Each structure stands twice: as C-alpha cells, then as structure tokens.
Image 1 (cartoon, one colour):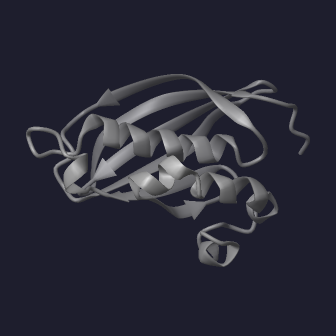
Image 2: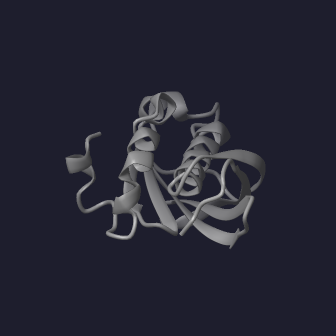
Amino acid sequence: MEKEDLRGIVAADAEPFMDNILPMVNAPYCVACGLRPVSITRDRVVMHKTVLPSDRNSNGFAHGGAIYSLMDHTFAILSNIEGPAVGQSTCVNFYRPGRGNELEAEARFINVSRSIYSIEVRATGDGKLIASGTFNAFRLKEIHK
C-alpha cells in the first residue's frame, strides 16, 4: 500500500505517524494473510480479513490461528503508531466459531504508561463477537507527545 491508498482510512490525528503506519500495513505477514486496514486513528485500529479456504479448520470454521493473526496484527499497528513497541503478553478468549467469510478486529487502548501499552482487541464475524483479548506491548523508547 502507498500513502494514497490509505486516504480515508488514516484519520487526521494519525497522519503525522504515516512513516510508522505504512511499514505495518505492508508487513510481509500482514500482506500474506490478506489483512486490510479499515480505519486507523491514534487510539483505535480496525482491520478486515476475508476468510480463505486455507484459513479454515477441519470443521470448516475460521481457524483460531487466522483469527488470532488478525487480532495480533491489529494490536501491532495500534501499539506501533507513535513509535516502536513489541508484544509482551496476550490473553485471548474465544466465544464462538468464526462461521462467516469475513472477519474484523478492533483494537483500543485500555491503559498507556511510560513503558507498557495495554490494548483490548475484539474480533467479530457476521456481526457477532468471536474472540476478545488483552494484548500488552513494551514501548521501546519514550514517546514525547
């Protein structure tokens, strides 16, 4: 993706961080998994995934790993908007199978400290909550706002 492709997706408050956002939406794993940004602001990221046949488990549902990948990368974009951060811990609960062909994940901050981001990520499909989790990231350098 180029900056022009993100017009209407990246909000004005996140535009100053485009140099951090572009590498995240173009990360090889993100592209290979077919993850697409829907909305990016400084405090909220929404990503979309079309479930492919290769994303399905033996029951025909979206594989938990495909759902987790969407959630994890949505978290990664939000935690890296202002500067580099790395995942520290994750706790995910799955509530129902991913039955549909489309998945969406939304990440929002729970708490921000000098060294740790805590972010809630919710995955939905067919308008229903499939999974939610708390993702923590370690900030690699002090961010001055």
